[in-house]
Image 1 (cartoon, rainbow, N blue to C red):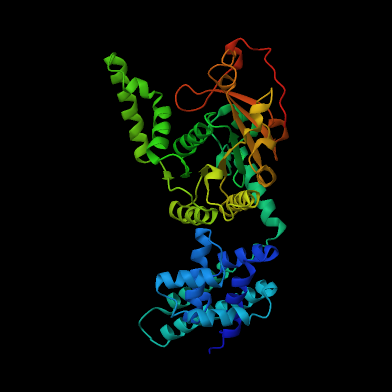
Image 2: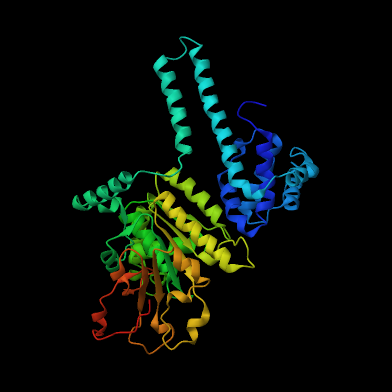
Length: 458
């Protein structure tokens, strides 16, 4: 056993994880541990295989205990390397206290850090003992770089107040210099962007609505603006619609055409003009930083992992969109409130971590169908408690003509802000036309409705 290894600590971590995930008040600490632990935090091959299996079960949303881990390792053919069922049972049985899991993980991370620092220094010493192979300055620089990388990975997140003040001053300077969009994000709907002055790069934005109201149209309009106007990368998780349908909506709106125009064989001039506009738009999309993932039933952990990967690959994402929240894989389908709460919290944390707005579309419950005024409110969000709590901004999408065929608001999509944490005055309705597969600002006076009012509940 090396100086920076302790088999008892490793066993206590594995054993605690097999217990803590089954105890309600220990589940949060268990989830944090699983997300933070890496295979190379362990020195034992058996423990590395065990944590790999635990992380695999966690990523799939499966329950984690002695039986499920053993079954998973049996399936991958790794059960013997992990010591067999007997060893895992002994580790679980001999765990001093699962409630001490954070302390065990902290000690394990400390040992892992020690090994990595020692490895970096030993590699440096080995190079120093080979004179003439590399310049001394290069060797010293390599050692410093490796140690610095280790320190960065161990960053606790605690920072001095001046860091926050400097970030704020940089944003103010950007506003003065006309470069505000480095620090804030436009959604591409002018009246909303004007009211909010752009959105914070750590905002978690929820867009709610009943089916067919235009939630996806909201998201594709944002995608087009952020990627093509602001030139920032977009990561779009489409859990309901395939990539071709999402792409089609974005392209048609950019080209200012409709599908009907492309198929209009009776009027060749209209058809040819539409294809010409689409061809021009496609030239823009060749270099557009739009990335779409249309896998179904992704968990919040899978989305966070993919977002981190794409954030690194693109040099920083401009916005992340999830369509839609209730389609994500639930950790506990029998308890929707808890599962949706975990998803909402995970997405908010992702926005803070990557400093990139996260927009999650959300389905509303059917209760509003029974009301006289069917414009949605926050309480209409399915499993609304934690969603409402975590969201910085909530928009509701509403089309009056869906319920009132004779309405004077035909062709109008209302985007109703029902929560704005940072800009309270923005809580009102905004009006848009959706004639061309996207949302375009609409002057309500065009409908000769200057006196139009309705009761808006926030």
